[in-house]
Length: 443
Ligand code: SAJ
Image (cartoon, rainbow, N blue to C red; front, side, top):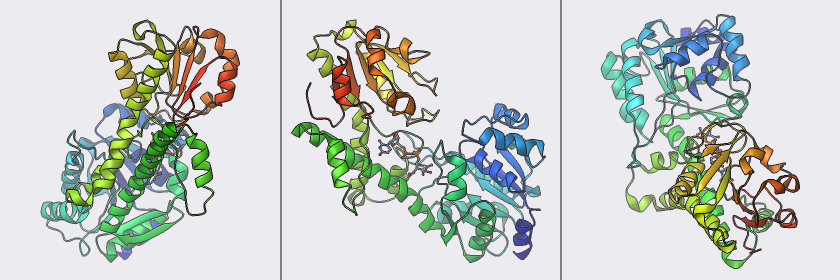
């Protein structure tokens, strides 16, 4: 163990990172930048080729420079899984996806495949870290027995095994990787010690715990956020009922020193929040998970609510659905990222299209249109439009000059503001019918 610790301190440790996606590639690049020799491994040849030619296949602020600098310095290289010999690595970080099936049950097939590969290269003294988000108990009941069975080695005495969940949000990945406190949960104290030493080379604050606590804590963070947003969404519907503004309500409630309600929106998207609550509850009986499931159901119902708002508004304006054009602003799942994974724009656009509505989408960062026509800029997007639906709160949308834009629209234009980016009074002044999520006023 001391040899491994020393190789971390003098940076002679050779690290492999399995999975070069949104989490794996920043991980590999940051460890390379800290002075380690790092191999970023992936099954996709285009990813491997891109990294080796100094191009980051993941769009994330600062990552391109980091990849380029470290590939040129010879500290970072990328390889296909089939080319990797983990026997040459002193440590491996597993950073593969753990999606859920349609049934909402965890799909651990990518992790199991990675474990097989690690099992082949596992040798005495190696440190194996899992960074993928996993259901509670996976380290103790799947990862540990699988690796021990494949290698004949014992965790803690022959090799080291820890769970170190990632906490990085797209758009701020590099900064958060370094600055957010990092949980390090070893299978035992030796594993915790070496994993902790490794992550201290990059992360400013490392908190030691055990593997199962770290697994539940990681899932608890995202589930808490999902439940909080579900509450904000339900509050928005309550405020619509009472004809008051949820923004004012939340602002006032949050002046209480122990209250911090999140923002309502058109739905919860992205790679984590729609899935992690299901990982948290996957192994427990139904009487112990109803809050989490209800929150998921509320958040999943928000796209439908937004479409209903639009249909009512069109009806009120006397517009026939088969003759209207609706513009969706934002296909990214959240503000200022080029990432449309599980974006609420998807169910909103697809439902509008199914109703026979002509839909145009515009997003300053994302090319994904979910079947709508994609406009190249805002003015093209709203030209001859009857209604805009704000799905993503990109900074660009908050700065929109409604006065300037007004002439592009057809008569009696409608704004469905599901992110509350516009001032309702300004919108009304320039002739828009304004409907905001949780804004319980009719025009
Ligand atoms: N959203 C709301 N209202 C809010 C906040 C967010 O509707 O008040 C929506 C967003 O628009 C988006 C979704 O929720 O559609 C998820 O966005 P998010 O800001 O919660 O962030 P993610 O999914 O990009 O990242 C989360 C983060 N977790 C927490 O903040 C607890 C991040 O730190 C994790 O690293 C990441 O999940 C992950 O990978 O697990």
